[in-house]
Length: 82
Image 1 (cartoon, rainbow, N blue to C red):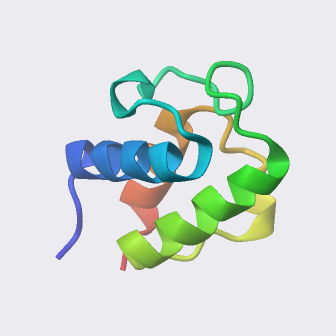
Image 2: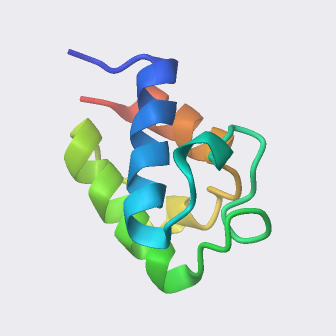
């Protein structure tokens, strides 16, 4: 069953918390992964891999560069879920 926007945001918040130690409540749609959440490129790869597994989707490398904010990632996963 496809996840809702709220479920995806919650899941990404948990993933970012596990990988980068950012409090779940700080992971909001308008936040930039690099500027606001201090997620570096290596951690971003971990976030993407975890998101792919959790939401049963594939995020190609060329799409990752366009995922600047949490909202970008939520929207991408929402549109590309299995």
